[in-house]
Each structure stands twice: as structure tokens, then as C-alpha cells.
Image 1 (spheres, rainbow, N blue to C red):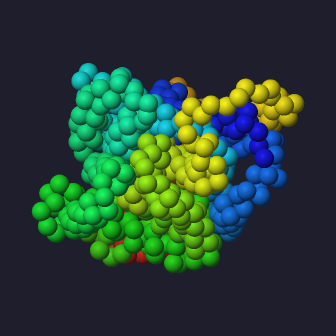
Image 2: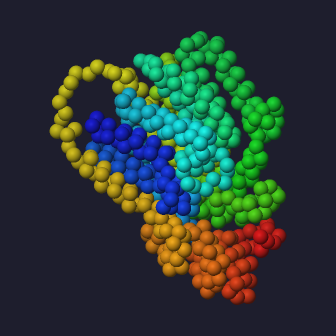
Length: 564
């Protein structure tokens, strides 16, 4: 089995990498300050941790985690099948759409993180993950408070007018703060008691709750409420008799049903929970389901739902959210999986979650005392899962979903087989490290894998940096250079649209027309690319007719595809 030294290295890579993924933002050199940089960190941490682990004792690791490995393999195979069969651009399948980056490689990295987390075996290693969540949360609490009091020092566009945190969106930061809120309570209940942490609750919790409200994200409140409910159950069950626990569960069930009804505009909680976006999500979910049903075996391609939304939406979506309002995510990770890869991807993802849920159930049945580490892992995992049902798979949040799933499975296995390893400060007699433990091979292999992950993950950020440089220089030559596809000059529909519009507004009609034709050839499933070709000055009558034909194909319910 993997030695303790390697396990410690993997745990450190995962904890540092996960926190850095959440908090890293790069503003200035790139147009997307959030997703592309986070993808780079995820790529390095995923491959470095898995590489170090497999170099230690791959056979033992496989034998101990057969089911998780089988499900992960099925998930990757489903992604591969989806990517190969998709008629969307290959670069979009591999790296995802602009501003999302939920492509093949992102999920490959997340699977690697999930597998690496299965190697955690001691209290110290799980504590690394707990402290990682707390650190990332505290950084965001401080940053958001600064923004509220003094303004944002990050020079990015904020169309929302709310706090964004380091996740670039009020809904995402609201959800993460909701996760942190209960995780910090559980963290403060650790033994031996840390007086400073306990006292800090009096400051941290009110500030976090205030920021959740200021984010104006209902999902942040819901996630925090769920976490408090779970934490309350764990604590009450450990302190009181079964009757009190049952009464608590009944009360929690009533509150949960009332909250769900409130989201559906029924009952007293409507004003606190319902937002217009709830109705919008219903249309997005329906479109996601319709997309998956249209391609049940392979899906439409990784992160390619945006090209299918218009074709898959219901007629009611023309009124709400509106005929020209579109999305590139179903706002539900499960439905995104169904749209991306059909039933194979959907079911394999669901089974991976189920594997973690089974581990949680076993721990809940077995553990009768309050375990703060389990409390943090469980509330954070449950908060992410809830968020994933009503929102988008943002990399800074998704990394926790996959990491915590693997961590919970590992925690249950250790608690079942070697519970003494989960007891903090277990006294052990000092022993000399064996030659295997001193072997540099895992570190060398881990570093090589990390470099490979960096090479794979870099293209979106490097491409974006080149595009940003061209925008700042306003050089036609540099803009043209950004539209020559290569590994480190990836194309996306948003870049094409922006560049074509810039050339057209600068009266460089021949170039805007040239690249519009290249754009629709690159992605003939993009409604917006056909639409901009239709409106260009140099487009011929035949090209305009072809554009209308394709716009009607891509948006069959729209009565006027040329309306602005």
C-alpha cells in the first residue's frame, strides 16, 4: 500500500491546490480572470497528486478502490465517446466554452482529484482538507468585507453590482460562503478546544451571514441552512436521546418542505426564497433534459449545451426568459452531464455521487459521537451537492465536490478498518523510515505528472492572454493572429464574435467578412456566428440566405431569427 510519506505529500498537494483553485484570480493580462487560471491550478494539483500516488504502489491502490476506479473509468470513457462523436469544435469539447471551461480536460482533472483523495488515511491528512476549506473561506470573507467597505481592488467588470468573491459571480460566492459558514462552526468544535477559534465565531459568523445576504444569492442562504441542519443533527444525536433526535428530524423535514414550497411560490417562505431566476432555471433545466434526450447515448459534446439551447428550449421560454436570452449551461450539473454525454455520462456521474453518499450513510449509522472533521467534510459536501442542483459547475466550487467525495469515501474506509488512525494525536513509538519511504520516485513522478497537467491546462489561459494583448494594442495584425487556431491559440465563439464586431466597426469589412466565414465553418452550430454573418456589410445575398437557413435550423421556435 502507499507509504505514509507519499500519502502526506498527496494530502498536502490536494489541500493547497484546492484552496488555491478557489482563491486564485488573475486580472489584467487575461479577459477571463477566473476560470482559465483556476483550470491551470486544478490541472497541476490533479496530475501531481495522482502521479505521486501511483508511483508509490499503484497495485495496492487499485485493489483497495476497485469500485471507485471502475466508475471513474466509465465516466472518462463516456466523456471520450461524447467528445469523439460530437459535431461541436474539438477545442470546445476539450477545454469547454469561454467563461465556463467545463470541457473534457477539466473533468479529467476532477476525476484524478477524486481518485487521489481516496488515499487519505490519517486524522492529519483529513485535517489538511478541513483547514484548506477554512483558509479559502476566510480569504473570501476578508476580501468580500473589503469590497463592501472600500470597493473592489480587482479591476474586473462587475455587471451584477454585488460581491463576487474570488469566484467571479454572486451566486457562486454566496454558495461558497454558505458552505464555509457551517464548516467553520464544525471546525471550532474540534477537541482539544481552540479558544481563539471559538471566540472568532462571534465575529466570523455574523460577517459571513451578512456577506451571504449582500450577495443576494438565495442559494447561499439555502446552502447555509442545509449545513446548519446537518450539523445540528450530528450534535443533537451525540448529546441527547433518540426521542429528541427524532423530533429534530421531524422539525427539519417540515422546514425543508416549507422551504421547497417557498421556492415554488407557495407558503410563508416565498418572499425569502423565491426569485424570478427560479422560474428561469425551470426553462434551462427543461432545455438540458431535451438536449440529453435528443442524443441519449453520446450527448452533444462536452460543454456544448450552449449550441443546443435554442433548439431544445420550450415554447414558453420565448416569453420567459425571452426569445433572445440564452445560456450555455443548464444550471444543474446533473442535467449538464446528461446534455454533454447522454445517459452514460449522467449515470456514471450519479453513481460516483452515490458511492460518496453510501459512505456518508455508513458513517452516520456507525458514528454516535460528534466528530468535527466528519462534520466539516459532510456539511461542505452536502452544500456543494445542493448547489450543483441549482447552479453551474464553476471550477472553484467543483474542485470541492470531487475532492470531498473522495475524502468521505476514504474517511469511511479508515473509520471502518482502522479507526485509531482518525484519533488526533495518537501516540506512536518513533520509528526509522524505511528505504521505500525515503524513495524519491513518488516525488519525481508526481512532479513530472504535475508538469504534464500544467502543459495540458495552460492553452486556454495562454490563448486568452494573447487575445487580451491584441485588444489592448488595437493592432489589426495582432487581432488576426488570435484567430489562427493552434494548441496555444484556442478559438471560441465569443472571441470570434468580439473580433468580427471590432473589425466591422472599424470599417475593415473585408477582414470581418473573411473571419465570419471562417467562424461559421469552425462552428456551424453557433446561432450567433451565423447571425453576425447575416448582418455584415460584405455578406452576399447567398450568404445571408444561408445564414437565415441555419439560424432557423438552430432556433426553430423563433418567429424572427434576424430580430436584434
